[in-house]
Image (cartoon, rainbow, N blue to C red; front, side):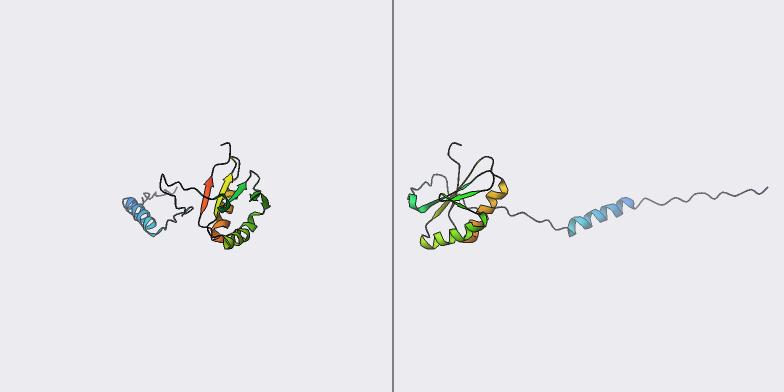
Length: 133
């Protein structure tokens, strides 16, 4: 019968594979942009700078664990903090907003309150510990 002739298998030259992988790695490292999270920009006072503040210049904002907000002993929706804070600041630009939370308050609610105050133009925001903590 017929004898089939087997051809030798050809191998792929892999000597330059490491070079190609390295070039791809360098390419992606150079072309990738890394976004830096900015976080919350707060200017902290220097240590030992404690000033006596008149009580009528402080507006307490209490945020509970379910995200409900009391602003000066009246319930307020988070989306309405911006307008209320603006009105208060028009009457007294020296106001300090003291934001207090419980240990169970969701971070998202806390950040929303801070964002609303920043939108209102509040430059003096106190992050206070709630009573008893």
